[in-house]
Image (cartoon, rainbow over all chains, first blue to last red; front, side, top):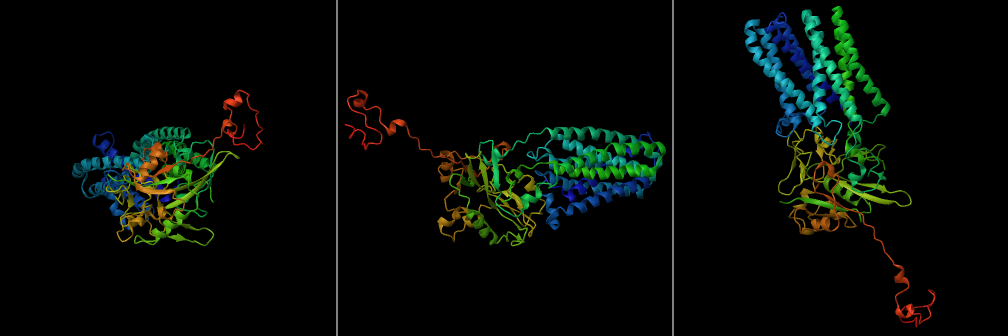
Length: 317
Length: 243
């Protein structure tokens, strides 16, 4: 597939936002149960504001993906069958949940706020997880895009989003509430470590895939040697633009190693160093580099998927 | 239940692209808006088409066959493009099984084109909505046309009659009989999409001549050696002149 930057930014930005919200809510729960010292409502309010800003940026990016964004509201219609429709319903609900969660923390004193934010945060946390599932299922439900059609897609979207969200929470708390950086940091490392396992598992799976569709099934002729001599046109068409990345294998391999380095070992090392030295800039660098790595990871995710329609478009003539 | 579909006979398609141009002519002139072309006379032309004729070479020289392969939306009975549409713009008509796009509801998210393994859908760059073959739905029910012309434009244009149109659920229809009697098959059966359109395979027409047909060997007079056997080059009416 041709990687669309609108979708790359959308999925990575909202993934980090959902992870950040889950981190904030986890901290609130931990403080409530007395595992960590409580922090001010302003910490949660500013964190939620960051969540909402990231969600809005993702939403703006997604608008560039649509041919007719002014009709976007119609996309909520088919939630019974379409994962895209479900995502479009859950996305604003989650954003609204995070907004009100931050608003309550900001307006009310800590004791009275907790009575509202505990259930509100729980509901929003459920929406955050649901949004991971919806986003990933958009790709995982397309069974003939074999690179995507696996439960690993859902696991990877969730774990990569959580990892970047908790890394962001670590970096954010290093500036806003340094005591909490030591709470988020180990979770960020743990999630990054889990994500490297599942992402490499999906890479290993995809390297061994055997395409179910061949030129033989595509045109229904049983012969081992079939060559297309004409795809019916000399110029380009939607079919030649949308479904192939148009890059070399070398570039694909380079992007794969780039993201494998940027998403996992480098941020993990920066997290460890940042936590050991109490260095906020190192923790911020960990998030920025991991996010850049996730952009490469998402690019590779799209580019690697091999659409069977490409069988029909192999020879310009 | 009716399921309208095309049956395309690869044995007689000569790859003339008449169905392509006729499809474009009819569908670009309709009320649904043009199928936009960009840069049509320039170096890098592009445009929206519902139908293409592709060419494949099967086999190794000198034993090759050239197969012309017209390709358009297959109007699947289990269309994977329909349930993924978030707006309901993509739908399958229950009354005749045609898969259509409501251009006024489509948001141009391209998700349906990702969900079609055949590459049958194209995003129109001008209208910014997804388009595809409609089986000329604005033509096949038009009571102002003579009944013989109430067929898709591609079917009417085909000079070799390689394209048949009808209801594949009616066992007595021309298309059902063609599929049954001439081994009609569906594309990419591995995905369970159950395409309504079918293709009829290439058929080799061999003339098989046995040696006995050239020189009769079972003439009893010859077997008994009662008659001299004439040479092959002799004028012969077989049983008549050989004695």
